[in-house]
Length: 306
Image (tube, rainbow, N blue to C red; front, side, top):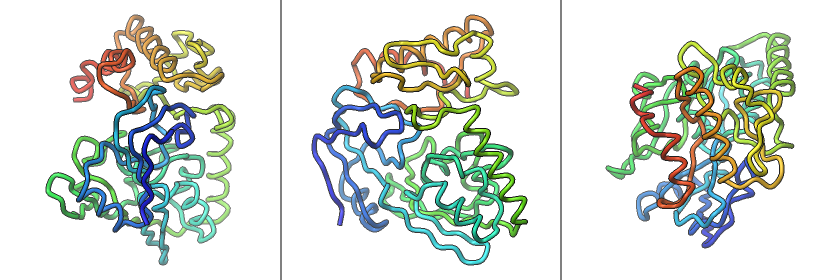
C-alpha cells in the first residue's frame, strides 16, 4: 500500500543530508502502485536513493515519488531482472556469490538502478549499458508502459533516452557473464580501495561527483589545478582528496553548496575556458536566490553538451 506524506522533510533521504520540507512525498511498495500514481496524479519527480540530488534547504513546493521500497530482483543463471529502487551494492554482492562478472563496479555505488540506468552509471571500465538487455518504462505523456532495448535507450556518457524525456524506469533486465571468483573478488577489492582512498565515505555526506568530466579530461584534475581542494562555503567544503566532491562538513545548506559549485565552475572557466557541466541535480523552487545561482551554473549547458 502506497504511503503518502504531506509537508515531509526530505533531508534524511539525501546522501548529502541536506533538504527542507517537501509538499508531498509518496512511497509506492509495488511497480503497480507506482504506475497507478503516475497515471492518476501529477508528480514533479520520481527519485531513487537521491545519491546525486541536492535538495533545497527551503520549503520545496513539489510532489515527489521515492522508489526505495521497489527493491525486488530475480536472478536466473546469467540473467538479472531488477526493479528501479534496488541499490547497486546489493546486486553487486549477489552477483559475486554467483560468480557473475559485469557489476563489480557497483559495489561502492550508493545509487539505485532507476537513476543508474538513466545516467548510464560507470566506473573502472564498466558501465550499466555493457550488460543491459531491455527495460520497461512508463511513458508519462502517453500514459502507457513501453519496452526499450539497448539500442533504443541511446546510452552515452552520463545520459540516456530517459534523461530528457518523460519516461520513468520501472524495471530492467541484464545479462552478465560467468567469471572467475578470484578475479571478481580482486576487482571489487580494488574498487573499494579506490573509493576509500580517493573519494569521501558517507561519513561525510556528499552527492558523488559534482561535475561531469569534459571530453578527454577530468573535472577533478582541472579543479585540483585551480587549487579548489579544501575550499569552503559555509558548512560545505571541497573534499581534500578529490576536488570534484563537495562534502557536508558542518550542517551545510543548499545555498552553501550552490555558491561553492559556482566558485568551482568559475575558477575552471576563467583559467581554462571550460565550463564544467553539473552531474548532480538540484531540486528547489523557481524565483529564489538558489534557483538564480543554479540557472547561472547551468546556463548554456545544452549547447555545451551537443
